[in-house]
Image (cartoon, rainbow, N blue to C red; front, side, top):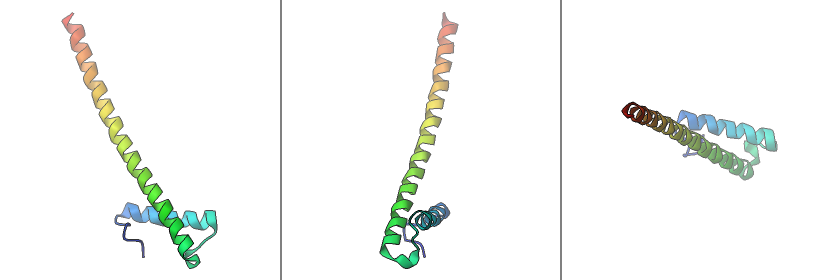
Length: 82
């Protein structure tokens, strides 16, 4: 069963991916105990933070585009006034 931090379907996907990475990169399985689970948790948390940063970056880009559009409108109005 996943850790209590695994709350959403996306989290479940990241958790499973972390387990795959630990098995592929370190050659460990659940039977290896604490080391396996520490690695899974570390990778899971890093991936989750990266997802959150990517989401925040997308929101920032969206806001910058909105501001650029607003500046274009202001520039056009200024041109029309001259």
